[in-house]
View 1 (cartoon, helix red, strand yellow):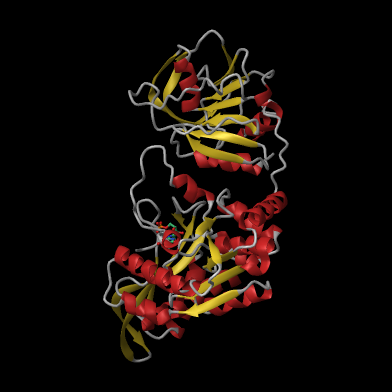
View 2 (cartoon, rainbow, N blue to C red):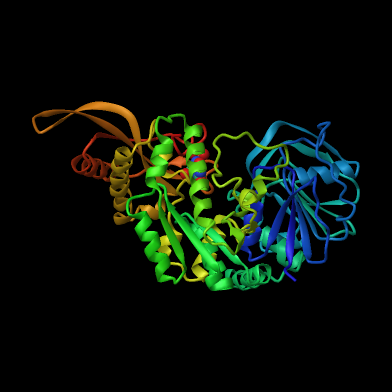
Length: 509
Ligand code: XMP
């Protein structure tokens, strides 16, 4: 039985980070919203309560019944979780006055508490809460304090329950990882055997059982997720897997041929479909970003469906859904506002009467990469920057046409190759070029030019939710700009985007 840790989410921005830190210990964990506590089976080795944007004193504050958990499973309550237990047991939580936010140091640590094994005195922790614990019940014992906060951490008599008002999961809590590891290995007694190799073994077995002798179709995008999903499925059902790769005319330069070649090398069956012209026709006259996404998405479904129908015995549609997509579809506080619609295969499985199979739905992106490495996918494929489903279609601002796509492919190829050659590709999270619907005056030789402007974008991020613009060296940008203007006809000016997300987004459309 796969041991696991349950994380109850109260809506904190750090909940996913807790999950990642647990998994970095080779321990499987799942996030569930506090409103939907799953059955508490014996494979659960411990429970973690997350932080929250709520105050426990809010009239609509989340207060689930923790009766089935407390005293029965090791419990670690973080921030809001810590304040919630105090509130539930009759203590007092109130506004911290000036918010307790930022760095603090542990002036007291109870060295007998197993949570703090190996944590030095004065260790720096990260606080982020508006409330604080003012009075704690008599059966609560303080395990750590800062100069301003006495009950910074506590344990509860006669139950394996520990609480922290600071965030051990964030980088600025210097010994946070040790504290979490102590909880997981010493208190929950986890075996820590959830490695990529073990995941592959279990996943391939499960896929084999689920799919049996049926056939499976998978849409390849050339990206990491669908590639890793393809390899896992191929290991499980071999020739029963049929991959379809659609060229929408909005891929990077040479990408269609490159992806087909790498899958041929892996002996995985891929049907390549060049549908560029269909996509360009669907995009004719369309300028509004969401309308472009919809046109691309709909054309993709039409092309994919027509191809998939050729595999008459297919019963399954495999998708490269990963864990953040799963969690985001079960949010704590209503669905978040759609800023950009990111999913362009929606509606396909129902329409085609296929069952969905999602081998990666439990994994974070970095875990997908590790699994990919463990099944022998080449680094060049795994360490690729994210690339949006609608491709260059949302990087050609305004109407998309074949000649514009050709210009942008050249510009993008020069930029990305230069990043690789100068060792910068792996230092940025995502990079790309944007073709602006703006002409500017230039001079080439003795001639006046009036051509298009491109913007270069590079960002550093961990998950794309927030991002900072990358400080690429000026000399590098200068060289790339020269090369683009000299080699790509139709472009006479290059600018660099220095906006962060928020308030900007990574893509321009
Ligand atoms: P934004 O522009 O929202 O991008 O800051 C965040 C991340 O999502 C990618 N992105 C998309 N991916 N379909 C996708 O599959 C889309 O329509 C789409 N729009 C943005 C973007 O490249 C970045 O990695």
